[in-house]
Image (cartoon, rainbow, N blue to C red; front, top):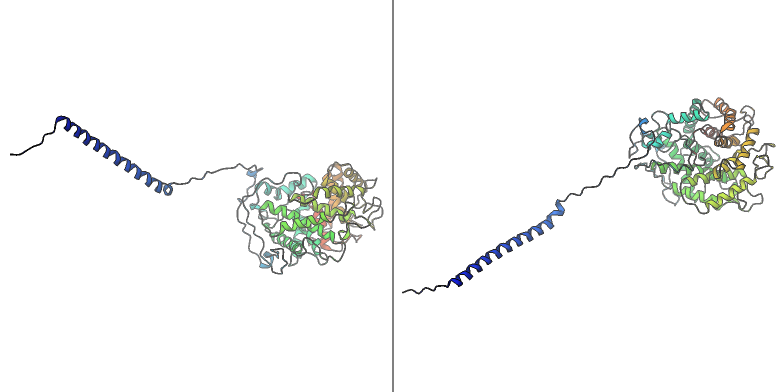
Length: 486
């Protein structure tokens, strides 16, 4: 006999409910575990599977007449044509410690450059082209700048301002003369290399020649490197010799040239070793060594009895204006300018002429003619305004008294200033003066690109480099890049 246990109906119903709940709980737990494992895997794997998409931002640059410039695209790397090592390697001091070791030409890599060139306050409209042919390698320059460096634009400026195609040919001949006569160390001339190198460098920059130019790039680079080298070795000072008290002329001319060079290099993205330091130190030296009269004197004397002279002062003020255009900061700059222009205006005679270091005294050998009138007028135009009363009086004096006769006597130093002051003033005064000097310069140039000594001699024109640089700068005035004037 077997014994079987029978559950009551209520017990069987409770058992079925328990089994059903257990099954549901197992399913829910399985789902939760699966979901948890999925989340863990997703946390581990998703970062490696995700793709970061960069946001592309575009800018519309404001470029004038881009469609008219059928030239090469801007390239981030400058590819210069091969040349002899002696012309492509320049002496540049790489640190503040003087060293005889030469280092290579500075890195010319050009990043994506800005098309906004200056504020308009300190830059003239005129540029040159950098040689013939394809524009001297200026495909690497932003389009708005490239237009200003084109031969077509330069010839248009020549025509507008009273120049001719012959002016352009004459300037090119002079620049090629300089190319042939540059010393291996980057300088020019034998007696005052620093000052002469500064003048020739200004002539190259006036034609928009930069370290990137195909025909003259090596010359410009070597000249800048030579002046930077002198500056670093002498702790901010520049001169061929500091034994003569006339060295402020050389210092100011070289500082002027280096400041213009820095402005170009900044716009082109050229990192030229120690150039910015050289400009900062040389311009600050000028400010720190101003005579108590407001002018500048021989030897940078600050308390000399004669109180400075306008000839020395004019170069300091040109250098200061070019330094200001670099956008570097200089201590006491504005106070220095105010005092300097006050000094210049004190040198003006009641007839409008500017004296040497007194209102009635002209430089020796010039009789009663105030040969520094152009210098004084230009300084006022640069640092105040061309409409200033003293500047207008200077122009009226030049209208009446300016003389230029290469066969009988032409003071090139005087007319270096006159040409700038007159074109800044413009109008009938400029047209009259332009007719006075332009063709005489064009017709007296030597076949090799240099200029002979004017008939009167003197005025340091025994140096062929000096007189050729002054004549070249005069013929570039129609379009010359002038941070010192507007």
